[in-house]
Length: 439
Image (cartoon, rainbow, N blue to C red; front, side, top):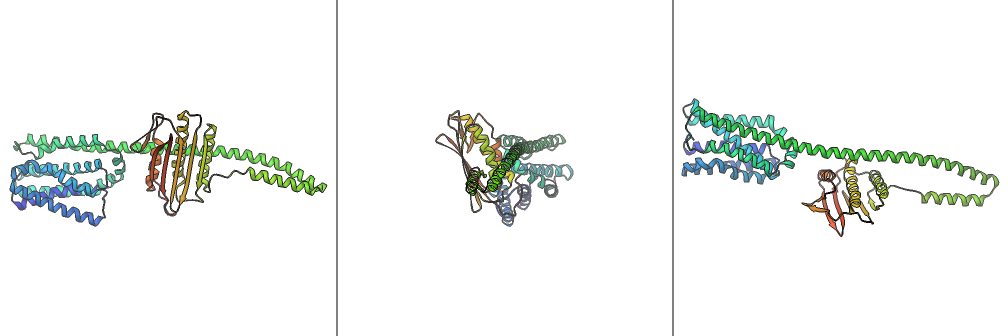
């Protein structure tokens, strides 16, 4: 450190706090409205800079040793309280801000000593210029790409990623901030520059690794959803072929009915004709098979999987009370209903029980749709962290369901009740004009 008065310390601390807070805020999804966030960040930055400056005047040696490292918890707690991102993602943004602060401090101090004979004002000017460059790059080149991938990072970042980043950063920061033997030499500057570069590479590699993992996982979910829709379309085509065969049979039978009716009319046997027509009408009414419920998409999905369940000797009971079209995409209805029905069939088959049952209910009340499914399940079926877990299957289908439900700001609950696996899903139906895709 190059020393200086209380005023100089305030300027340095304002620059340092500004860098960390600005980097975090630019990459953050804030919890509160924009004006409130800006005011809160500005006020906290000023208060923290004054507090650290008072510490600098009272105990300069300990300030030089520990101020840099203590800025992480002091500013970090505030930033995390103001953010709605996950803990690990917030820690990553915080360490990135601290890393850039370390780079600015290193360049300011050693740049001043290398080119300006240790001038305090040269140090401050270098810090201001670098801080401006960092914020400019963040705004114009990094922020947009980061926020586009923030969902992937939030889903994938874990404790291991944070330990890796923090340890690499700690090594570089200790050398940058710890005074010790801060002799001025090109060799010493080179060592710090290499450590800073390596810490930056690790930061970037962790970002790219978890961004790639998040995208890969999302692509797997989307692939499974497309496969489910392809399977549904294939089964719908099979139903269409069966419908054509049934239509041909009806036409063939209708020809015989017409011939018999003509004969009754020709012979004047009115009573027999009326009796025959009445019997034919009763047969037609008894043979009617409407799709479950009043919604065509839901009815088609259920019809396909009811047929599949019946082939496996599974008893299916349905209760559908959804009339007409709703502002939920057909592909999303398939993702939810088809997946839970298919999982229910697999659960029944895995149970090994002679009696296998599935009860599925789809009802609507106002702008809410409730889907509930109960099915016979295996004894080893478990619920862990609120999600089903079994050795007999994967959770890709469950991931599709959770994504769709999350998009519609709904709720999902998995339960085990009396040997039955229970799924309860609440979907908030958007306005009719809403057509944004969840994927």
